[in-house]
Figure (tube, rainbow, N blue to C red):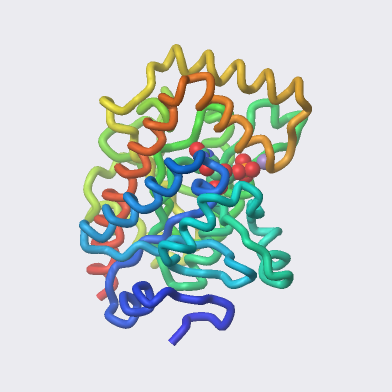
Length: 307
Ligand code: PSU
Ligand code: MN
């Protein structure tokens, strides 16, 4: 039985749900707008395979011809991976995409909404959106942060990219009561590099400890999400000085070209990939894979603690 009339569960996800098995949500903006073809398709398939090998069920979420799909077939994954013109869907865009039958890729915010409607508690991505540098004049603060404040889903990520103002991002999360728990280190991760230099809130290394924290938060009626910051493995990280240069240049070009709104993040990601000669893409794929393993283990621990 579908958990909601507007959701379409894949057979694999529906079976996992019926059997009470751990499910991990995955976003699709990272496929359509975060990585180039064909690496995006390879990444999407590998991440799903890793989650299965950890004993959980992957549920990639997207809007396909107006249908909110929880779990995609391989041909649906391929279609999204070759659709840079798919809509980028955040909270405000979701009703339009469904009502008018669009093809759309869900951001962290929209994926959290759909995952929660489907009863999925854990969601794996690369990096969350945040407060952009210069937000005091642009007002550019990702809707991901508001979503984290209101929707009870645990989001496993490698922190946030330093294209953002990470210090303001953490302040914003604090204000809205969103805890940031970190794995293996106290500091918040900075996506391409393991350490942002800024402390997260709590260090919890094991899936069991993370699950206990999350269950306790929700049992207290604190219905926010949780950020689970999982640093990129050292051997896949980018040199920090190089990264800082690419980011500076990409930000400057975005300003010169007057790029704004939801086009900012995809522009910066693509430009950093070019400037780094593709190295940033390899790091991006490695960190999502790492998050998939951590997310699958967390989903299993949460599932076991649900009684
Ligand atoms: N950060 C990344 N890769 C991504 C994104 C963010 O490292 O692909 C995507 C996610 O889908 C995230 C969205 O939810 O960008 C945030 O976009 P905006 O800054 O426009 O809110
Ligand atoms: Mn924005």
